Length: 292
Image 1 (spheres, one colour):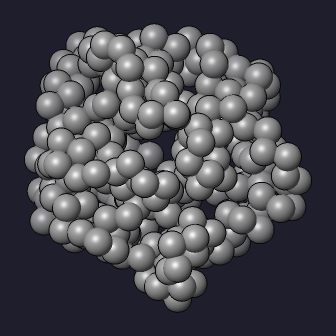
Image 2 (tube, helix red, strand yellow; image 1 turned 90 degrees about the vertical axis):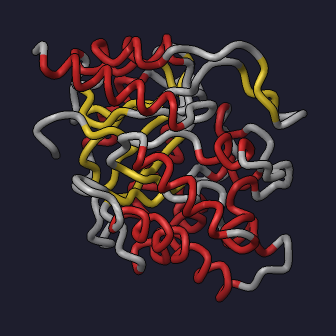
């Protein structure tokens, strides 16, 4: 890992919506991998311009099952998954300084598009979840990202499945959980979740994302297993019925020093965090690092 913290980008969907794109469908931002890849590329460039050092691909909700429901073939889905990495890579190659590409691997619940990534407990076995995740991971791996961003994982059963699916792919990963206070979204202790991450040689960092900003530092402090990753939401509560956020936004940059004290080496923002917030976070991290 880097000697200092690496800055991740912010939310893909909120920035696409700010550009005027309708993301109300079940595929969310993944739809634009086929319909308007240039819009996704523009978001990656905007985050790099704001100071981000890691671009997370638009593959969070891109799955074989989800695309198949819209009549998209398996071969085209594979091509779209690879495209997600290529779009981020092209933006990275035109950026001065450190520029990584992290291939987003969202949970099974993201494919359901019903908020299940904040609950877990899908009623599937570890073996079934492994079979769901492995083909997508293989397709993304073929596009050679620098790292997998296994993100918003709500429970230990799915975490175990993704760790199984990562085996033998030869690409490092971070594993971050969706949480409720100091437990996973499914209610398991985060100490167990972080310990599970340590059991895989592929995992280089673990932590939390897509969580209320105020919960992130206390949660991250429980991680004694690996370097930390943290990228919270920008405030409010997600309403899966209306597919929208309710409530005010947070100033996530204020938490940067507490994340560093808790061992974070990868820091950024998730939903409702845009380039302006990433620029502020970058400046705050630079100041906090210089004071250490």
